[in-house]
Every structure is written in C-alpha cells, then in structure tokens.
Length: 386
Ligand SMILES: [Zn+2]
Image (cartoon, rainbow, N blue to C red; front, top):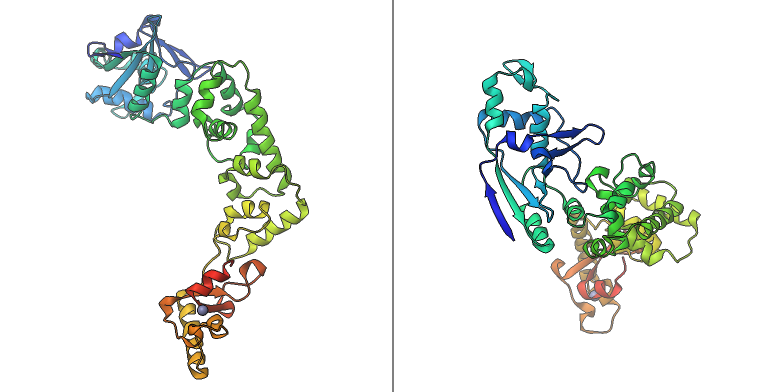
C-alpha cells in the first residue's frame, strides 16, 4: 500500500467548491470535485448539532489540531474521505455560512466575522494521509485507523469495506428510520436504526454469525431477498408465539432460537401462561432466559438462574440437622443416614454440604428456608435437578 502524508493542504484547498446536499444531509464534494466527502456507504453528517460542528470551528480559531484525516485514492484518481468527513463537512458548511458560532457573546456566521479570522480558518493546514492500495490492504488499514472522532462501529466499518449494490439495498430496508416495520422489530431487537444495529442483527441471523463472509459473497447482488425473507420469518415466528412483548425480549438471539425450535408445534395459550407465571416468580433471576426455557419444554432451569438459598438459612438448617442427627446417632446428611455404607453415621462439616430444594424448584418448590435441606456434596450432586 502506498501512503503519502500531506501537510500543505489548507482548509481552503479542501473546501474549494464544497457542496452540501441539504436533502440528504451530506457533504458531497470538495477540492473542486476531486474529493468525494461522503461516499454512498458512509453515514450521514451527524455533527450538525450546534455543538460538535461549532467545536470544530472553535478548535481551528484557537489553533488546536483537528487530528488526522484519511483519504483513499481510487483507481480513477478520485479521492474519497475515509475518516474525517464530519470535520470537513463542518468546515465546509461554516464557510458557506450554514451555521453560526458564538464569539464575544454574539452569534456570527462566516461572512460576518473579521477578515483575519476568516483567513485564519482558510489558511489552516490539515494533516492528511492519502493511501492507495488493493482492497485487502485498504480494509486492514481502515479497520486499524478507525479510532478517532465518533468511531464507526463494527457494522459501519463492514458497510464501508463491502460497499456496493447489496449494502445500498440492505440499508434502504434495515437502516431507514422511515421504514414503518421498525416499530414492530424494536420489540425484539435493541439498538439504533441509523447506527446499523438492525442491519447487523438481520445479517447476523442470515449468516449464522458470519457477517463478513456473507457480505463479501453477496456484495454485487442486486437484491436482498434472502436476507429480508429470513429476517421476516424470524420476527413473524416470535411475534406469533408470544402475546405481550417484554423488554427482556430485545436482547435475545431469536435467530438461534428460531433455528432450534421453529419446526416445533406449540400451544400458544400454554406457553404464554407459563411465561406470565415465571415473570411473576420472584426466584427467577434471569427473566431473559424465560423464553428459551419455555420453548425448550421447561427443562433447562439453569437458563433462569433460580435464586439460591441465603447463607444464613443454610447455616440454620445445618445446625438443626446436625443437632437432630447427633441425638439419633445418624448422619446429618438425610440420604447418607438411610444408606448402607460407612457414611451412615458420618457427621459432615458445613463446608462438605450443599443446600438442596426438598421439593424441586421445577415442581413448584420455593427457595426459602422451609424448603431447604443440607445434603453432603455427593448426594446433592446425585440428586441434580433443582
Ligand atoms: Zn449424603
């Protein structure tokens, strides 16, 4: 990969012929058309908040460095901004007097500030790395430099690397805040549309976790049918099974559960009744696990992280069992006491025992002192199932 550090280009050079598209919220061109500021795959301009954009201008006026900016030189000679489009767009918009900054308690547009301040901005030199190379190199480099400003997140980086017809179509569907389906999706997926969270989720599901390969393979596709159909099947499946969306449903890997359970028939009334019961059960610590637990036929109670017995309750029960055992001359583990081996009369230390639900939790037994017994570790393990 060839890289070149430019230190002589001024803000004026970069913003020459700057063009901003108000409709799309994008800075489009600079350097008299030679520089593409926000290529298709980049996210929109998000600095226009009267704070971040103003901070860029104030930094320049104070002589603070703006940090490194990275350009990518394409085969046709055109330059593209890889990192720095928010800063450059802020500079360009200010020079076009699209927003004002506060100086000495007054709001000023570029056209209204003193000539020397205007010159200070225009003549400030920027630090710009220009790079030219094959796609793999650019990709590696791009991932390495993604450290400044508001960093691109993982999916935004992938969108940049695999930009093309597929990403464009996928973003129209999954990264479009105007899409009316988002309301429904947001019951089952958490995240922010314009930070690509829904797109990432859809890709993750269809690719079974291998987003990068999937994007690379479909990069030149002119449709997103598979992605869309698969995603909708999952959402429709969940949406059809459960009555009320609970907030915990947002962070579940529905793709995985769909793959495991979607062919299984369910009694909708029953599973929803079970979900309500478990939500009301104060011993269920992991509410998120309820859905997988119910779909799996209420067997794997580990998913629910049932609350364990309190230490002081265990101690009370231990002392009581020990006293009774010593009076009767039998083991303080009730299962050892009815056995035939050497442990029949053995008194275990508390550290050698574990608490057990007398009536199993899965059969409705509660996790309080009245349903607690201490068993030696071996018997507790053998009894298993809580
Ligand atoms: Zn025992």
